Length: 212
Image 1 (cartoon, rainbow, N blue to C red):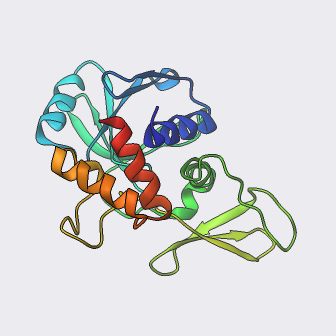
Image 2 (image 1 turned 30 degrees about the vertical axis):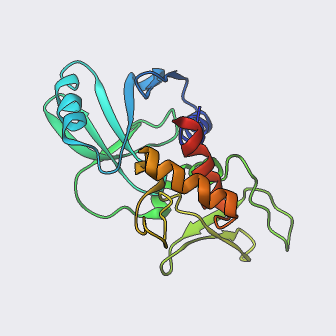
């Protein structure tokens, strides 16, 4: 599995679901709720949406558009389409579907903590003041999500895990995942050899090259 697939797999397992993954189709199957989750680009291409609508006559389909992050997902069930939030297995309304309205972070505390840990690939969130591990709340007071310990101490800002973009050069503004031609990959390889890509961007570029 690549990073995105591993994050979703980790997230579903932390919520308590038994998953089956079909790599050739980019599908997760959540056994307890008999739901298929399709990995796709963000936004989902029209052909994927149409296929989900068709398959929804037989199964519940969720489109996992892009990387795991703090948002609702499109759910197709029978003749209905709605936005949905994944919630802990065992909840009466699992997963929770809704259409319209606001997504309030404090309504999904356990799910958001699990999502944070999945985005961090299992790396713990530790409070430097009291030493607590993964005992925090999530808020979005401004542009960024942040983790605050139950003791009231600010811990860290949290990554939204959005797709990596190039912010300079001839492909400025392009998403790494969208780059696939020989010319584009040659450019990425050149940038790696020159040491101009750092951190998460470098990791995502290396992963993209290995996929092709």
